[in-house]
Length: 305
Image (cartoon, rainbow, N blue to C red; front, side, top):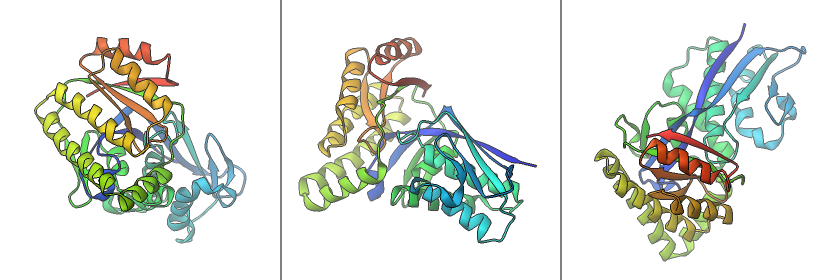
């Protein structure tokens, strides 16, 4: 007996950081990057066990970075006195700590797989609540955007008041996603922005401007205005850089993208590492840009949007 669930990654198009303060954000499912979560009976007579790329062993002995995941095992299995001699195994290709939704994919996949394995009959709202609980622990406060997107097949518009709203239309362009090779830290980046906003009227104004750009991006998407959407990318990158969230690697990728046909280019996610997203008009431009970016990025993916 086993239960398995496949979840996909995500990338924030617009509104990172400002979404934490109640503004809109746009987040795109990245279906080419997937993670499989499996719950199976323990093969060593112990449990719960955790098997990931970086750790094999008992949950009780897992490092602090798995605290969010441990909270799900504790709350859904151990606290309910369910049989605990099980193994949770994670396989897939969503790079960790890059702003690609790996922890949210783990969270939603874990809750769904545990729900199926133990026949808990959880409602969707409870599944989402548990996944966001794990994200809060992992990131020191999460907006809910990542979980909403990794469980969706469409672009998600999100704010804390209205929650996730799916946008089923397409922009009519291509997104080139570049891995800087640098690990980002959402918890560190969110704290860094919070401190700057609290101590500087200028930075508070910058944050408000970032929120406004997200609203403009929704309008540009709905009207299929690719040029406007790309211009908003560039403006957002300037603001995110003003919070010292960009890095030399991110700047190099952005510069290379803009010099080789990108309409707009920006970091995506918390910053301090992670990925860069670059907008182009068609598949040929996307493939050509990917070849150029492979010279300055660890890996590059293409998504039709």
